[in-house]
Length: 427
Image (tube, rainbow, N blue to C red; front, top):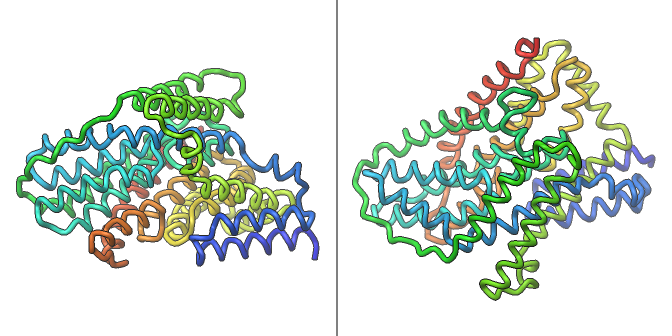
């Protein structure tokens, strides 16, 4: 069996196992990567270069800062302040969802849901109505806004690393409005959908008990990290590793602070770190790298270009909505990682700015997970929290909210990106 056959076979098998054994995805990714090395498809040196260490630095540092930020209870305190100033339950719920989205722009999605879900549950209990819709709203709001910034979610980090985009590029890229504005325009329409689901809850709610803030220092660290990433975007040197180094530096500072201020064990901090996702990401980089080395990426791009022909609009539409449909059921990280080089190659063949296809791919792959309860980790966590409270989330109940929410957000972002980044806008 030649290297090309081995590479595609391992990729397909791993991908199928990712779908049917999501709890074992890290082990699957690591084993598949080891088999790639052992079979000689890639050398150890090639695998090390296939891993995007800048993305790994962003992921690691951001997650450490976010964990300590969460423990400070500042997000919960802010949410409760907002809730206590609203006049009705519907607006309290909607503002919690909006604030969830804001936090998710800078904090990992699952962590955001864990911060906000208890507050949403408390509101629902005090008003004596089912919290199912509320928690679904919190989960999908987290997934939506996590796409808006470079540090909000793993797919955004992957795109940033692949396209060599910096923090500021997610706001303005090549002098044009970028991903952040596409997501925010989508969010406006998506939150209108949420309001339509919650508008019947017009009763006034009693004040929510005020959370006590443990420390404001983690908030300062998080804000400083974001500002550092923004300012570093203007520097010309070290662009391939700069963001990762900044995030790692703030991660180290956060660990030291946690040790000195709270007496937390550094060993415990590393034990509770999300190693599963870290190793899963590295495994995905190696799997996709094997497809690149053996020529499969170019083959896929040629076949896709044959289907699309010279119709750029059809190619863009296909990328966005196929990504939405697939990511509703499969993990968006391996899908996005595999499609990034294909998308670049396709855009080159069609002679279009790759930003159009790349941004469309990110929007479709990231937001499609909002359609089903298994489409994103935040959804799974939210449903798990409801189950602990004695509420069973039916697949259809989730889709009833998730599908219109997703279609509203994706359609608005899709139209925005076409008019800003399409061929007519590039002339």
